[in-house]
Image 1 (cartoon, one colour):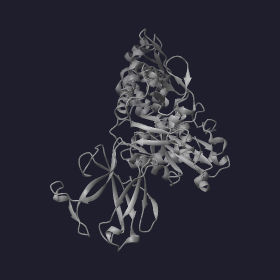
Image 2 (tube, helix red, strand yellow):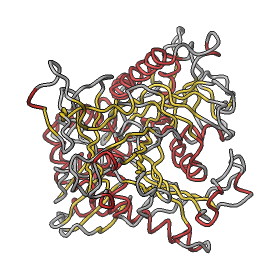
Image 3 (cartoon, helix red, strand yellow):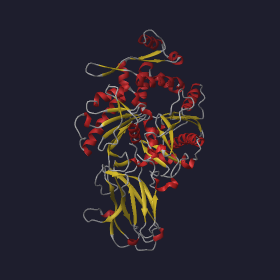
Image 4 (cartoon, helix red, strand yellow):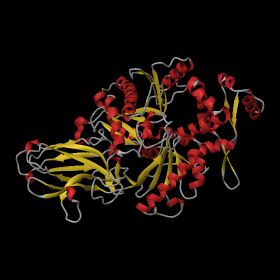
Length: 609
């Protein structure tokens, strides 16, 4: 796996840095570009781990913000949560707003309204406000990263950045993240600010680091990314979402590692925060009562936070035992100590009932093993279903894996913070272990962050991706009698009768699209005095759409091409050649003018959507 493309040595960065912006936690890491670091197996990566108000050193800070009435950041990370809890418990929240896990609000897909968590004056009713919060948080993490890199003797101009994005995000979501990052001070340059798709980053990490097998043997292995035709699936179980993407290795590249995406990225709102939500609503709601739970949210958020933190530790460390047939079960009860304030708010009957369940001990909530299993499975069952769906999808589009039995099947790689849960690992092994090898890296929560740093060092590692949609453009084509409606008829300045609103297909859903492949598209003005052409980009799940306004087609962005230099020439002498790159982590476009011989990149504007 080589380093940067050295064809433009003058613009080669001296440092690469990655920011893993997550629902629950966010961190950054960086590496110096040197001949010694060109080998990824020995590459030295620096992590920052001393975030304020965190009880232990760890390379992730809480994705939380505390803001004032003007929207200015008061505190961020663990410090924001601590100050908000103190203010809430002390009744001093006027003019303050708190937001946690607000990354989940960027994508408006009809998910649960109570995720993310907000308080005070923060209102996440529109994407613009969400993007402001993301910008504010990214500004804090960028300034911290720049300060550390400068202390090592480098300038900000010498850094190439990479920011992680979920594979299930659409083009406009990734564009919104880029805009937020640029507003936060990251470079407005696609060569210096790269998006890294989270499961792809995790795959790189698992290739370079030994991972544990979940078969109980204690054996360790690594992904065989240097073996041609090796298939694997990354199941990234984060705080908010589960992101599932499948790949096949390829020798069709000069790089040591080359991956081809197979199957369309899938997943959903199945992250570990929804297990926490189930704990609050089902367990606390059952034992403390829904009215008291609402009061805790309003008046004692610090105590509620303490309860949630105890559950957070318990859900990932709960030990598992097995029946004779291999069925896993949670071994022990989970004990949650109730703060004095919460205990005093309970009525006598509830106290007596809790004390009886806890063997006579007051101020303790005891969850039976079967209760814990139900809470965990409220999310885990959905994860298993999504993995099964993806396995079926890649066999439909790419055929069966080579070989026979488990050794010839796809390897499943479990990463993300929730992958620390032994229950999740055992349920995965029980469900898939007879057919698939399952790997979990030593620190699955850092897989994306470290992998994104390797991607920033060498972005050419991925060979192709599979199109999630049929992409195309609104254009005019020759009118066809008895096919096109007269309402769509238009006559241009050359006298040709055209049909407006036609869907010109560039790439079809499920096509394998190479990263380096350009999809050409020629456009012509319709008036001799026209100085620019605005092209609308559409997508659909249909393979052969005819019109851009038919059911299932949606506009996702626009781009504007300047053609002022050719005004006055006949229309047929004014073509513009557009090259679309759909296989990259973002849609990229180049425009070539045959009349002048000039070319330039064109930005697709998703923000107007």
